[in-house]
Image 1: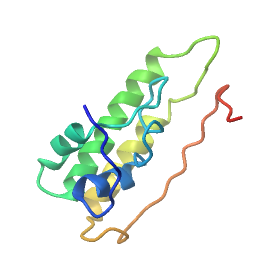
Image 2: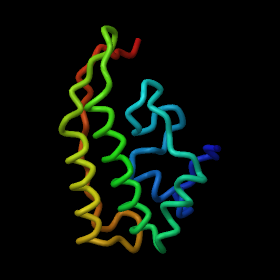
Image 3: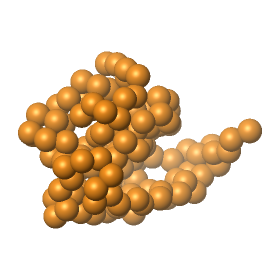
Image 4: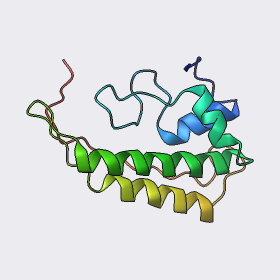
Length: 122
């Protein structure tokens, strides 16, 4: 599975941008490594027919991953309250179902997710 150079002019790049998955090694997935989706996985999201459909599939996938994480994860080193994250991603999917995009930048919605754990950047 690969993460090629981020290019927002491609359909894969557009999906990455909206999913918050444009920086390699700092993806939106809830595992300890905060991995990115691979280009192959985003290609599967895009098989629904458009960038907008790919976004909806991506947000639904993230909701499922975060729901599983919220139930099962946590250690003495890192504790994260992720119980609202699945709902946030489902709301994003619903938003793009009701406000389809044609060109990047139209109908964009920004939601900030704050981490509440022991992670720090030094």
